[in-house]
Length: 401
Ligand SMILES: NC(=O)c1ccc[n+]([C@@H]2O[C@H](COP(=O)([O-])OP(=O)(O)OC[C@H]3O[C@@H](n4cnc5c(N)ncnc54)[C@H](O)[C@@H]3O)[C@@H](O)[C@H]2O)c1
Image 1 (tube, rainbow, N blue to C red):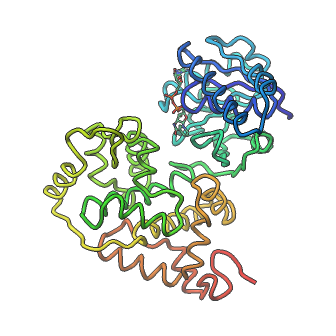
Image 2 (cartoon, helix red, strand yellow):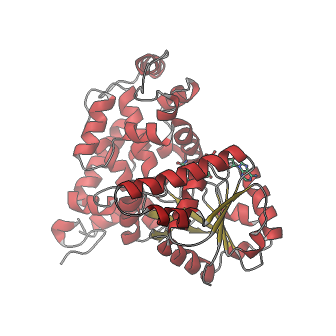
Image 3 (cartoon, rainbow, N blue to C red):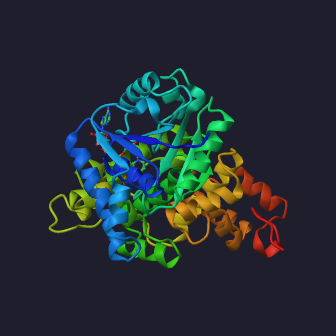
């Protein structure tokens, strides 16, 4: 099915930016919200993204007006009977999402695709609120949607092959890289980023190194952004809730660092709050150091040294677990982490480069020291046992000529 007209429900941080992306591809898009102020902000945001392009000489003023005219902000569902796809971007609460899906199912034509931009909730559960579960799918954009290249495409239990294909080609029409991901908590990118962010918080609370030392080590190892800079940008409330969901789903290896709870309770939510792991303006108590001291008093755990391995290895290990579970293939895992998290090479390629025997050995040593957060993936053991050690042997997760 070709998509001629689209709609977005929820004009917040993501919805407004997704509508701009759709209009940029030349398609008309309705944006619906329950709050006029949010619609106004979304239109301002879209205009400012276009104006930046004008400043860079990539568009002219009349092209901006043409594109802006493609976006129709509104408070009702007028015109939704005529759209081919709707992307839902309302708050991350299942009751709100299901209510929206139920409404959409009653209004949109039976062939219309209903997609969700959820970061972690079950697509199948949203699909259950409709009479067209075969047409319901996850379409997970990354923030900021007009910059980030990746879209995770997540079929639910009953999504049909045509819908997966249509959403993949729609994403490519939007100039995005689409990676199909099997449904699981955190999907792919957030699931792999979770142990990176969480382990950094453990290292910090144990006094192994400071925020800037850990962030510096990560960027030196090739990450586009250190874990604390990234957490502050994403919002620690979002990290906290996603961390809790993943802990519930994956168990001990995702047990959140105590410091994350403290940060959340103290309202140190990152950039949007003016303070998180870093401060943006004046600091206010409790400071990060206060919270670290509290955690140290409570847990009585201190470590001396910090090596960047400590935060990168759990991500590589999680990639091996996701691969083994069939969440995505090798190339897609690497691509998703490059396009969605800005890594210069994907985590499986990184492991191959390091040597899978070395990865295994270091994970085992960390497991001894820190427990199940480092328990090696069975697939990693199998590869090492088979002599598939990565680049140096010509075969690891990938093959090398
Ligand atoms: N913020 C991110 O970094 C990010 C990244 C990827 C995915 N997501 C996901 O995108 C979704 C939206 O997140 P956000 O950060 O844009 O949220 P947000 O709070 O900024 O925006 C949500 C918008 O939905 C509107 N809304 C609430 N109920 C509604 C309803 N019944 N009908 C229509 N509009 C309604 C609100 O008025 C608000 O404008 C969530 O599922 C989130 O997990 C967020």
